Length: 344
Image (cartoon, rainbow, N blue to C red; front, top):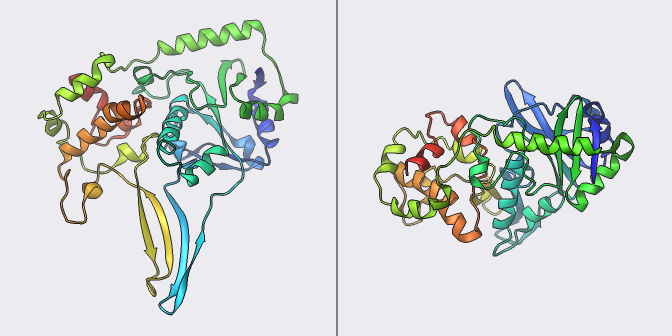
């Protein structure tokens, strides 16, 4: 299904989705992030943004979530109350193709061996309405080097393309997408042949605007294998301050820790929680014995790059990187994975 909708009609479209939780890009000072907006706030949504600083992955994989709460005493049995994700459907409006592709990568991880019921409950109730990148959202975008594109459809239910002249070209990609588009049927119209041709040209031109790339990416697997013990890692990690921005802002990083948070008055009262973890922190690999196999910055940087560009290829036949460029743009000391891979 291919429709045309005016930009002024987008808020009206969203108001018709009153049964859904809507996440949309919101600007707070100079930071864009995806936040919940009510139908009444639909008129304030601005899709004229480059990209959010944190990715919208928190919608399906929150930074902290409670699995269950427990209570009891040494004299009574412990009672456990599971905390399940909210069952309402949600829409992420205006997600960029690289971020949607990253959620698709997480889908593979959370279903490969054991299906994670908490992740799956959120993901199955989430509809992704994408916005094609014209121009690229960052000068450090390199999505085309890792199998993506500014108008990629991986993971998306709908792809919107800005035609200029106050119009969006809206294409449904899944049955969920058709369901959402049907809600706005009265405020949209069928796309004309010349508009379909215009979209193709816009998409082709957008590819030419990606200026950064990983060179000779087809041989990256073997080149990484050859430099595992290289001194390059020590050199490139010299400036790392262990802030973890690179992985916290990454749309596809999914490492987590699970802990019991107990009451200060009773160790038999509390909750079990999952929180994001970070492979760039020194204690990420700390064993209970006290041994840490990756105490040095060099080993941690190598692990991050190998995980994304080597191990993920072995396990899923995909890069665990979608080329959004956040880790390059936001690193306070200028560590650049594109430069590192090209040096290799």
